[in-house]
Image (cartoon, rainbow, N blue to C red):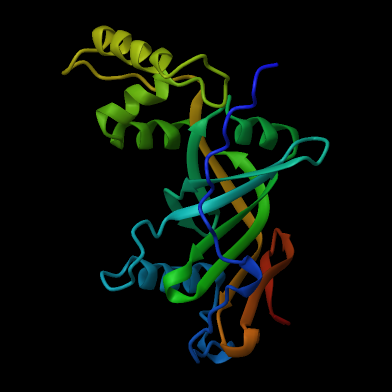
Length: 232
């Protein structure tokens, strides 16, 4: 009988149930809100992007999607733009997130700005951005990122990392320095158009402030949002 391999000692970890910290006595109420969710997000994004925020990637956001059967998945991605139309990111259209959006065109975003004791939570529909917008952003990317978009068949199972390095070397020979890298036909942008945008501010005793802009009407006469306070 072959003896079982020795199990290495696992590091000791604290009991998660005992991990807690208090939040500062901040304040966030209706009188502090901008007229629109875009304006309010701009204010908080400016705070998160400031040199003293301690946040290294303020545009990092958790993007949640689900397939046609409702099976969810999430991942951290980078926001590359926002305006009244919504929040934009770019990806391989063969990736898990893009395939799920094609099956079930709804998603969520979470901006986890822990250092500021803030979150922004967004829900809405997702669609592809116009090709011209994807092309313009691709051309702004560093050359290495452009080649990387071609090299990776995102979310596909691969036998080893050498698949990527060999593919990248092949692409560098195909498009040497000085030769423009074309936009991959399988790559582009997604935009989440919000129907709700919640601004969450940590408060003492877990009695956090949660103020949400919620879309209640949209038509030829424009859009109508309401602001609601949610219980923490």
